[in-house]
Length: 350
Image (cartoon, rainbow, N blue to C red; front, side, top):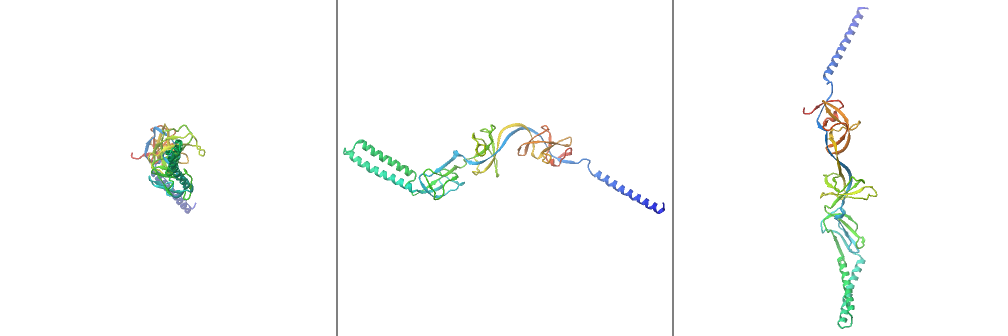
């Protein structure tokens, strides 16, 4: 081997040795910088054992309470001149709702009633003269008086119905909300035909659809929540029907609004309390949802232990859970989504 080859071989060995030293130094530096186990910072809360309400969520609509609604009917055969109120409108007591005019038949009936009174008065006067002259019997005088009394009663009834007035205004007997308008201008309506349905102000109630079940009963607590937003309303079941709706196959339940003001026809969610049971509750934020399924992390001996759970009803900030863990165990709340099974943890504030 020549001297030149020996020099090149020595130089190659030196380069390799330098590279190995650099790699080893970098590896030892990275290992020194990295922690042996990753650590997460969390806050803790206990698993609480408590009496949990059994809640059934149902839906329904606000409707006018039949007990506080009144139907305004045509007092006589008439023609609708003007409609002065619309469905859904809030009206005051005495406010004009509909204006009607006499139908031809009503005019004729009123004329016949007035003619009958005029005839009865004249006939009674004639019979009275004959009776005074002893030319008529007592029963004839009595019959004439009866005919006049009947004619006057018929005329009075006509006048109470508005006969004799070419125009008549139907007014609201109470403050409330117009729920139905059954006539339009120009309509010919018969006597006693429904014109307007008026619900008393603050007289609405919620009709909920319940599944046919013995779980529901009058007096059970209900929390009403407007579907399109608004504060919850505390109430109770006032009535449970026993005939299922033909379309929905549900039972109607009536729940008072307790003075709350919601539009008639508004959609409402009802949470019905049907009972209670012993359960375990954790903060809603402590439950982790991912592809493995809902789980929580129990913290003990400085480490996180994953426990899969079943979920019960959501109670706002808390949720009921079931699984293999005792009441009183500590669960991670803030920082739970950063944890892995077995990860070391630090408790914030400690």
